[in-house]
Amino acid sequence: MSGDTVLTLIFKAGPVVKFVLLILLSFSIFSWAIIFYKFRLLSKVEKESGKFHADFIKIKEWNSLYQSTKKLTLSPYANLFRAAYSMEDADRDEIRSALKRVEAMEAVRLEKYLTFLATTGSTTPFIGLFGTVWGIMNSFMGIGRVGAASLAVVAPGIAEALIATAAGLGAAIPAVVAYNYYLSRTRRIIIMMEDFSRELTDYCTRKHGETQTGSF
Image 1 (tube, helix red, strand yellow):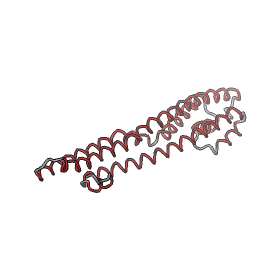
Image 2 (cartoon, rainbow, N blue to C red):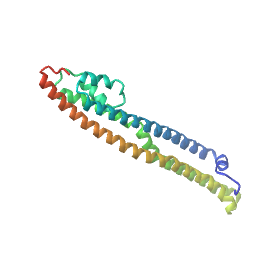
Image 3 (cartoon, rainbow, N blue to C red):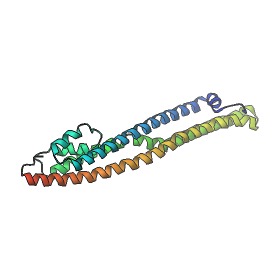
Image 4 (cartoon, helix red, strand yellow):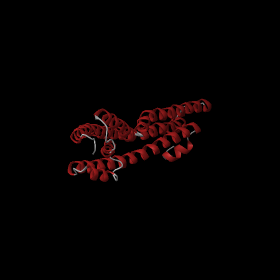
């Protein structure tokens, strides 16, 4: 036991505990992939949204502004503007309805994969606990077969079993932290997007009334 490393204990673990560890490893790999993906995505979304908002304030000619949005495919602001720009003859209710649909689609896109992080954070500790309970149960059955209950007999099996709990927590903690962090960033973007959508609706309605044609 004294010379065993964590890796050695994993290889010595029973098939059920190994299967549990494989499941936890899969959860962890996918979680970290999502963590890195969401960081890059939200950083680009915020960067493109900042650029569009600056252009929206600076550029008064909507055709030029529309051309500038073609490279801003990730910005919810730009996508809302493109939807409003295409509605030349629409009234306020139609514009608002169309922008609501865009808001919903953008919110879904921003929140994509966050549920997996939440699922990882809530389920992997219990999966690890199952592996631990199973491993300890096997250890006690081994004691029954050997007929001895010394520390040398019990300790290796319990150590193998506890690795499953540690692996479950190792998968859950980063997922929970990342979920809360990205959910906060996503909600902030969504709130700002909804504010911009209302601002854009008012602007389109005023412009429609000024031109009498709805032409942007």
